Length: 426
Image (cartoon, rainbow, N blue to C red):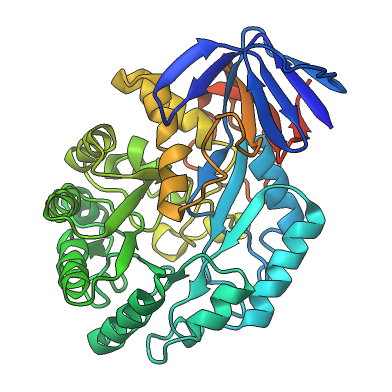
């Protein structure tokens, strides 16, 4: 298939440029920008006048709920949601049922994703068997099956000796370990960020120390082992300050924040609104401002959607009993553009945090780029169109989000995966 995307404004987040250019696609790759190559004949033309063209979004955390939680969502529904949100590459955590700790399970997931022929799926293998933090998995076999790294999802490793050995193992083979920085005991049972609001509402709190103590431990183990570590869902100003120091020191670490934490704070919980029951919990305004500053100065590498579909019934429970999580794939682009508008961040720089930067974390040469010769994973969107977040507007099987009722900027008009128009809104 040959595609001509005509008249759009092309954004290259890696270079920070934004200019009107046509894009020409052939055999799954970008073959020219600006002027058509010799003998090029388009089999499909996309009219992008008034629209923006960017690399397909790269999401570092999206739970697809398969295997094991098909009552919450299916691979089909969540892949459709990804394409509707302009996401062409996504990482899925290993906390499925059963967990992704055996090669056969990973191969099955990759096979299912390939058969759907939609977004690229990159599974994380379980760091320990059953995510129990006791026995290290066979990382080599899981990598051969298709894993791009190893994670405990939201289950911390309590035994630091096990964690050190896992990092030594990963370092030996050049693997990346993904860790949520949360102390297993200080974070246990908490449902809101410690502070005045949690005290007033009578909610059990998660102190900032739960994050910073875990970060200190992880950084010390990185110094000892030299392993590459990605920190998922950093949420506090103090945690971001520690990340900044670690990067200045030259430690091989990177980190992400969730798009929810870019916008929301603990006060948004209001009167026990379970839509705001997230993990990690929403923190104070100073933490949100530190997150935004960290995204601008590069301390924080990427934003992720932290897409976690949950049942409606699980959100109708009291706040402390409600299941944490929110749908995010279809809001990912819009919430990033909203942050750019509010903070006065150039659009190319904001998009970098959801395209080129996460692709660099994954060491994906084929993603996050609009260069000639790169794989044609693209998102065409109308940055001036607004849409209302409501269940009927979402393709995801999970309809719960703190942003229900919001009117958000930026609407995806087409998503191209490997040179094929996988989604188009007319």
